[in-house]
Length: 92
Image 1 (cartoon, rainbow, N blue to C red):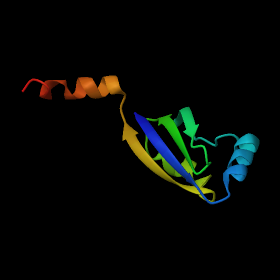
Image 2: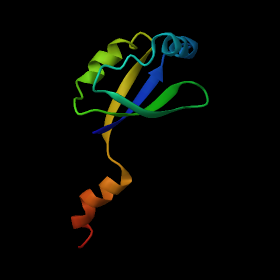
Image 3: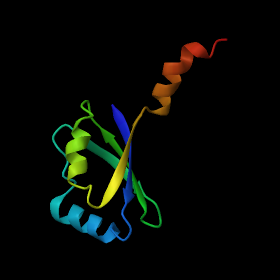
């Protein structure tokens, strides 16, 4: 399943977040896969697309980063999946 992760950086933490990522990597447990990410222009938030069949793995990953920000984990589906999922409701 896909998840949109919104990481809210603590004030002034952006440099430390990038330093830790450079030095330690993403620190993802096996089974939690990074797909892609986007960072707002002010370094307040990072939007990360991740994939896993076990959402409890987010708890392990968040522990490694929780001193630098907080996280919102949102299950998502692709637009194509959404269209297929709702298709039977379109014929009203």
